[in-house]
Length: 590
Image (tube, rainbow, N blue to C red; front, side, top):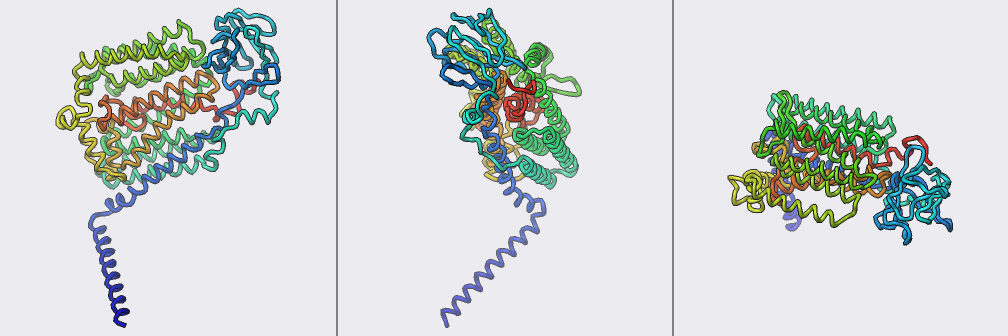
């Protein structure tokens, strides 16, 4: 009995203690206020939603169904069929050729087989053995139809339409190990999760920000949600199956508005307009580059416009944070180089996508050199690094010449050393690199405060509007990764960065299955911009790289950056052939 009594007494004591703790917990809730209670609970929801949205968007995009579409076949004696997977196909003995013909009498780069609406053309690249169509030797190029015989220096191939080949054989050629990945995940449910994140985030700021800004924050986020829903409805009506790229971009745009609302709420309207403008340009640019001939003609207009913007920036540009990269028109201020990025990718792609001739590569080198030289004069070394990286990728994708790339890299290293030596502003950034804590109150002020803020946020963050990094210059642009870590937590910040990185990885994933070199090169150029900007922004803010003043695509505050980010995304979207896999430009297949 004594033992039983003792056990009951201990149970009562434990119950009383737990009740006291529960009472104390609710008493503390009554004193800290509803805003603190909301933040306490909702900060656990944000990481779950962010990771869920990321996973639900990545898995469907990684499905290979439709990437390896076959547009026709080249049949060789012995009933061997070589699938044609692109609209432009290089033929030759080189291992870099799209269709490798490993015969000694075939040149390394013998010919290019290209699709033009209702027929194919084959172009002789100055081969020794020449090219013949149905026994007739061509001078430069000739028209090819299904059933015609093509001869490369004596090696004969018969062009077959895709419909002429047994369905089982074609299905085997297009089958991949990721064909069933992400099945059952619908973009509609992902959109609902995205909207929930944005609504909860808006109310998070509503309860923490000053009263005069609360209504503006809610209305801005609601308008963004309305735009997202409208786009989804229109895209669904147009039978666009894969909308995950846009959903990822919408999520990042929502974070952008939340960051701007916490730091500079008076710029919310400007940023919302930039998001809508960027989305409109994203749609228009897709319609333009769907017709490659039209896109190739557009390159001259964009290249000329880019040169005009460069000249205007050099003459009328304002100096901010050490760089002359802003133009002030009174009612609007913008960064011309953000728009030059779009022209740079399209001009380089349209120049080199078909034939890498000396004239074409010289023109592109001249254009690239002009852009990079102007950036160095503007003291915008970070953007110069971005342009140089894009130049290397575009040039290498068509040449495959490592020696030329090595020469270009050597010249870049010498140029960087010269810039560090001759430009004190650039030299100070490199002086602080890796030693910012020694300059915590001078040239390392921004990065040290960013690292302190990021560490204080932990995994879940302190809640939107509760951080102190917003008081540091360029917190919402160059140091935006710090705000994300501090206010929204490391998990949400990493999810946002991974979304931008995934844009790039997805573009490289698409390259082998692109129907045209035009789309492959454009997507790779865009991927390079996203990757370099993300690396410079994130690693620069935490002192893993020098701080260069580069924005994080879609997330950093800035109308020019937002519009350019959306415009560049159009190149990756156009490279995904699944969204229009059931049609061709002419509505038929050969």
